[in-house]
Image (cartoon, rainbow, N blue to C red; front, top):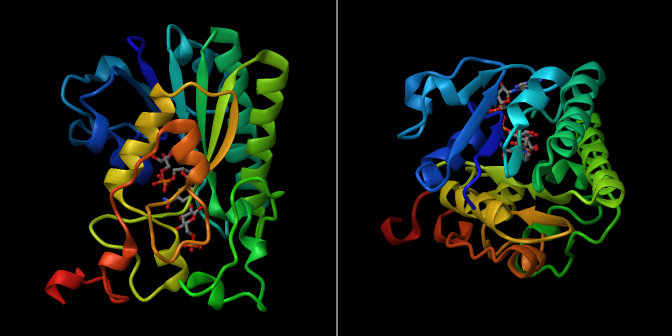
Length: 262
Ligand SMILES: NC(=O)C1=CN([C@@H]2O[C@H](COP(=O)(O)OP(=O)(O)OC[C@H]3O[C@@H](n4cnc5c(N)ncnc54)[C@H](O)[C@@H]3O)[C@@H](O)[C@H]2O)C=CC1
Ligand SMILES: O=C1O[C@H](COP(=O)(O)O)[C@@H](O)[C@H](O)[C@H]1O
């Protein structure tokens, strides 16, 4: 596809993992409410391609979407403990503004950054920590109802529902990626939950590349690496998007050391 991709929240952890991995593979328009320093821009992207704006600003969002082929919507409050006023404004209002602006501008597809916290209440006391281990069969595949464990998770479930609404009423192609736990270089240390839902930087970049390139209607997929410990299925991401991850937290010790060097 030749049209630029709008990436909101471009200066954050997920945005930078995407740009470092596939920054040279697409034309970009980058949006964040914080200015982006030159070291956060991929080669060929200049300040002219950067918009400093809040995702709740309708006029700025409509302008940012002009001529865009696809949107990766990451901007929001990522804190599991975030208070209601923040997730209401940044995550729910922000997502609604992004989807509506995409429709207004005739954008074809939107990838929405959802979260494991949209379903974290499935991790009951009776199921944990066993469900984080390889010898346990309990799993989620994206067809289950949301079951948030906090208000941040509620906001992500709301974003998924907004995506469903804009798909059904406006024919917008929407993929909701329930991202696990993104860390660089090694999985989260001494944290079984984090190792079960690890998303490496290169798998993150590849997954969102597939969100830009694949054809889909409405999808909910899990965004994790191919971890041996996983309780989230990545089959739908493979089938609908052509996701083919390379990493597995089992290649590291619980302390995060590569096993071939341990
Ligand atoms: N990092 C992770 O492991 C996970 C992240 N996610 C989701 O992915 C998205 C990105 O997360 P991170 O990169 O980790 O967060 P981050 O905090 O590192 O980056 C978020 C970026 O969005 C910008 N932003 C926040 N609110 C904004 C607003 N109202 N308008 C414009 N820009 C705004 C911030 O300035 C920041 O650059 C979030 O929606 C988060 O909920 C979901 C699951 C796991
Ligand atoms: O949605 C998110 O999830 C990850 C993993 O959650 P955690 O509670 O196990 O740390 C979190 O690190 C990230 O900040 C958040 O946006």
